Image (cartoon, rainbow, N blue to C red):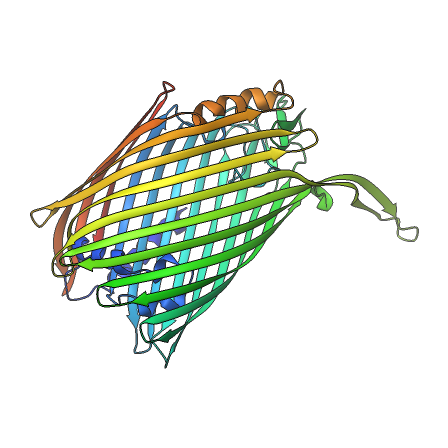
Length: 511
């Protein structure tokens, strides 16, 4: 832990030494963020086709969330501390780079039925205890992207993402699942006149490992549950003894982009496809099943300049299809007659093809008008829309969970004087469908998780967000930066007599 804090501080100081002579403010930073489109894609080579303004931000953020509008497997209270640093920087004469470091730690209370990081709409072969407990999490995410300046008609780039962390349960049975994830994304662009075509390919390896479970009690009579989708869950007293699980997902994908840029507009359109295969292993390479995903995405991001108004119109759609094959396996033992050494192996005797199926469709729209002057954003107003359609299904016997949400939002922000920013957002979510059909609604998992969660999925809500930020210019040995202090809060109220609230504060610097 001390090493992580030290690394955070060193990263912040290192990034701050890159500060430029011109004072970086929130207004300039926000203008650059609004006009930079290639960073919203996987294509690192497009960095040098966007704004080349050197800029960075570093901040510490602390927040507290509580309320009964939550899912059983997520917990109802969370305390979180984050350190975030990112920087866009011209590197020498031929390169332009981006780097970010994100450290996230916190504690969640009253979480149950899930000892894994991905509890929902993912791999169904998870595990957990029915007894609510506290969970600590700690994640580190590193991202880097490097692009060449245009070399003739081409630019070349490489993106790297690396994430490590763990999620630990602090109550018997005690679990600790470790995460290691990395992604490598080579990319290039080719430009003709005002148009550019980009291609990015990526390989992603995601690994979660639960090596064992422990207890403090000398003779605990606790059940431990393994799930295989929907209400299907098996609980065994002492089932945590000798339990281990490893998830390894390999994903390959690509993205094709087309950009057109004129004097008053910039449009970037992209399509992508990812295919993943996730292997699961227990003791002696036991395999409960295998999980497969297909992910399709399309996005159009557009910017228009009309006088001193910069308009943003973005639309994105994604469709994910996942399914899990379930295996029935038997343990075989063989003994070497010469050495007497016994070996064990699991053999698959039956495969249930596509026994668990998942479909997710997301649609997002974002319009914003930013009022600018001298490449600074002084105020903005906007509107957002999101549609989320999710369907979980398990066959033989058949059970389904389906829900459709539509969320509408209005946003706005403005500067007061040279130092103060006030920003707000109001959301309204309509649950147009929330339906649960179980083959057996009497199971412990159905009664404790799936049925209570329907109050969450079926709720309509109002949410308000308010944020106030104050900037303080500083100069240290010729380096100029803009320190800021930010406070924010959310309140959410549903028609199901549940609510949730968030309060937080941040301290950081634009440079």
